[in-house]
Image 1 (cartoon, rainbow, N blue to C red):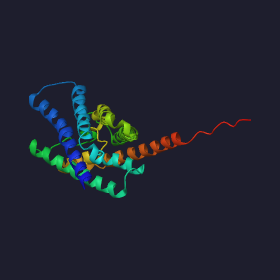
Image 2 (tube, helix red, strand yellow):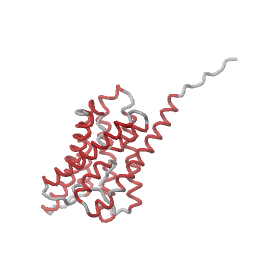
Image 3 (cartoon, one colour):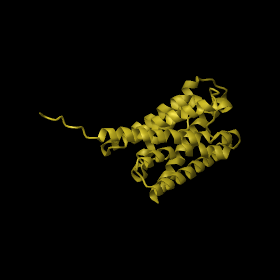
Image 4 (cartoon, one colour):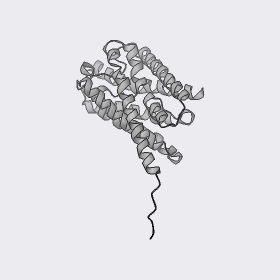
Length: 239
């Protein structure tokens, strides 16, 4: 039960600080009328998401592994590194945590508008199409989950794993924010969409499906690479 609680807390914190930073930055710009380059606001939000992962990795990581993302849990499960029971428990805890985090944001900002929800078309800074949103989310999640699986493979990497994963999440956000706001995490997308409703909710299926597809591809590629590396080389025959 402790690991499920840890996943709930971690996902809640991710939404509050990650999505909250996005809402805060956009609210400040709107209220003050200030104009800053999109690159600066993008970098600020990307760093916020990355730092949350670092903080959670070194706090709840020892309890649950700090997945706080159904896509990561799917990749781990597909590589037989967690039971089906735990996979289901993790996903439920993550979804509830994402919803609770979005609820906290709605209270803090006294509004259910946006809450850092993902989107395409009019909800995208670049106005990207649904097709582009799907492709970018698959690619970003593939890179993120592949990194998570790789860096957590060896126990000796535990000291740096949180940093590597946090930096990688920052990296994928830098590219993804202008397109979709960057999901790579169904729980992070579902919570804000459920509370915001409207167009964000109608589009949320993209940010559930695409990250899961990207995670599945990452798990398959990783398994093939690891299997290949573990295959013993044939000794050259001596004549």
